[in-house]
Image: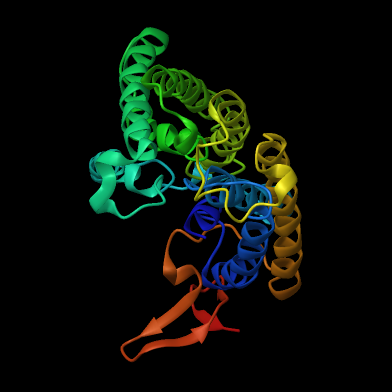
Length: 312
């Protein structure tokens, strides 16, 4: 849900967040339960990142083309400041360190025995190194956003495939591919930055990378799966899917469909509840009028010609 709401940063307030969470959590769990019948998604490339990315991006796109009268690029808070970038770099470092524990289905005390965790470390490391090198080559300088998004992109793309990988070269391949792809995605977003449809790179960083991670997991499952591997992970699968990679492909596209449909439904609910133009939600004061006692009035604030404020 954090991924989904990040997509509408600047054009969504508390009301939008409430609707996104209530509907999103239900459909997220519904999608996850469906996928467990015929796929394994320990790292969450499909159930978490793909779902959140396409879910949030769908809402953001629809809000932009229907209820956003001015682009976010005109807002002074749209461009990150030095503090924001520094904080994001620290967060990226934490992702690099802790992301591998997400891609495991065993206790962290057994981390060294998990191919999922080790594979993720190789992948993220390769993604960061590749993103730095390719960013310098493509842009002539190092773009901070490429460094910030690299660890996340590496962890997202290998999430679903991590437990199927035993060869470090396969992890390195995923990392290099994710690094190159994310730098290109970031450059594309800068090109369309004058008319942003979603915030925080959610669509490409989470949605598309997660979608690719789901497809790649089917490839790794076809290459590396044998009758004696992943017994625990596959114990609950329907018999016809136990040694069949089609389950991963089906799960990838089912998640894509459910996330987009959910986004459309939530957008309709938002528009039914809130008919106003949504131009600036970077500040809480846009949505709430506060006084010394705390929150007292719901918006809107209308500024008259005589600069006197009246509350509707």
